[in-house]
Length: 129
Image (cartoon, rainbow, N blue to C red; front, top):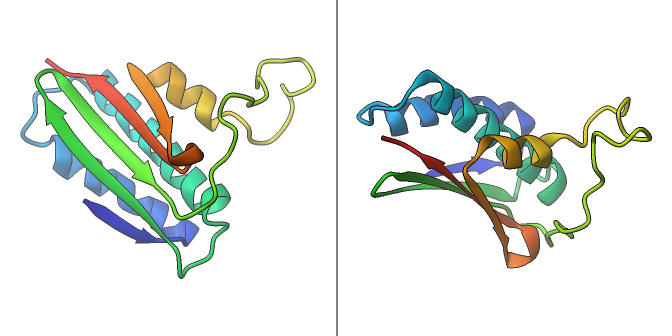
């Protein structure tokens, strides 16, 4: 488990966490990259949007390995969000906006994604061999 204060500088802790979590698992570079990008986006969103960068609030990252799946769960202390009504970042009116692509990337790079706790928890699964 990784527990972070809601300071954007703490996003840098994601890479060593992923390296440690995957060191004894035979995963290819593409899967490693997909995990790293997805988890970095999830933690960044949890700090920035979920906890509004309030350093007294925490983001928790858990990992579980089941059969051929590696699952990462990221939880924040925010109120959540309407994950069913996220603007499409590829729509013409959004294409030039800064931001708004994190969940799009997580959905594209993970093998399965679920939101719980009104959107304050995200669970991403990655197939491993």
